[in-house]
Image (tube, rainbow over all chains, first blue to last red; front, side):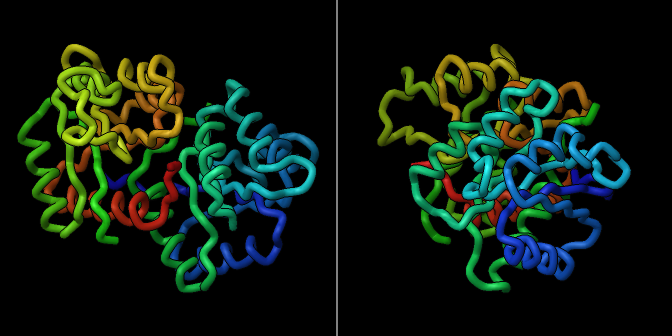
Amino acid sequence: MPKLASPVSILIADDDAQDAMLVQMAAQRAAVGLRLECVTDGEQAIDYLLGRAGYEDRKTHPFPSMMLLDLKMPRLSGFDVLDFVRRKPELRCLPIVIFSSSDDPKDIKRAYESGANSYLCKPHSSDDLSALLKALQDYWCKFNHFPPQH
Amino acid sequence: MNKLEHILLAKDNEDYALLFQRALQTARIQANLLIVRDGKEAVDYLAGAEPYADRTKHPFPKLVLLDLKMPRMDGFEVLSAVRQRLGFTRLPVIVLTHSDNPADIRRAYELGATSYFQKPDSLEGLDEMIHVLHAYWLKFNHFPE
């Protein structure tokens, strides 16, 4: 049963500002009612999730329903973030979708083993990106039920 | 995407499994739906235990759709067997159930569910869900080898 519309907030962790901006633009075109929050490295992603280091206010920085996570990032990589989140009891249910330019089978295997829910490769064209975001929104925001937040 | 993909559906209601099969055909999705009728069968199938030992006849699925309320072993027990005992950490397992109880949703994610869907209660809803599942998992998602 498709769910009632409720504001869905997605945390995007990507050090490439252009990629993050393209996602936001494509999301605006393809999807309504998504709230996207961006951080640019793994350490910031963890700070955001824990609500510290500038992310204390949950009104301006809501705890996300899910995270789109790049793998290659400075300071802490996407793999480090995955490991951290899955070991932290209050974070471990958070759905994490890898969003990476790598289609290396080793990265894909390691991401699933570290607890990624799904693995998407960054498309090369903006049309493909829009199609991907539409599928992502239909799947995660329309049909999937996110874990309840506490 | 015309590659034949194997999807394991664990559901004790045979009528629903048939509806699901029909919806796949209507959508012209070339997926091979493998059906098991309870949680014990699901675990045996994934473990490759008899009568599912022959992987040419009973291929390992790319994706599992798992009901929660089933006889012998329920979906929660299946999830924990799949993730812990069998160690299949990379296999996407999507819960597909009547329940939208937050406690069930939380418990399913805690046991390692990839995602949680509530079963559509109409044929149109089922068709739409199958389109969305197909687009996301079989067109865009990258699976481990």
